[in-house]
Length: 223
Image: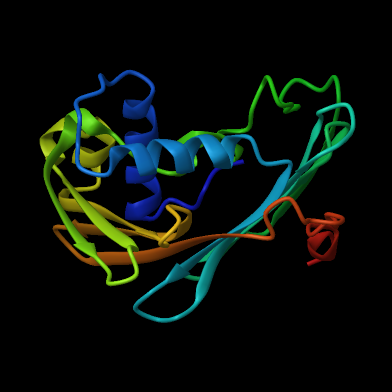
């Protein structure tokens, strides 16, 4: 499974890779971000909704849930530029629809992937909340009267790796919105390339309350 190849998606991957290897310079409100990342990685279930702020359209959804044996079941749906991608995986079978092509794999097949709490899916791990301290060039914040915190990290694009260069990234920033208790409400990603600007809002919903994950790919079998 991969997110659709939009500029923001490609840059997301670049930042997530950086997160695993970067040092830990102290940045304003970084403890809130670190805690939010840790909290997300320890969830039993959740639904991630990615909305295009310019159009109001939900372009991506990722829903996951661990069972009593810590095996992950997830579903993903993404659309962009007339293309669609969907995937469902329950640790035993995987169903994929990739812009007109349907496929089905079972455990033991060459390209089958199984995810657990120890062998995490990238989008069910803390890297989903992008933060690369060594690449941050400036920080700004707004403190609400109620103690809420809005913090924006602007990145030095030259430190975001070759993926950022390949899509012609000119600017990238993330903004995190925390309530008065320090809990993450949502965050945004803003990417500027040589051709366009992408503004996405990421909401983490249904935290530890996903009941059942349906196979969202079967509907495409005969499409």
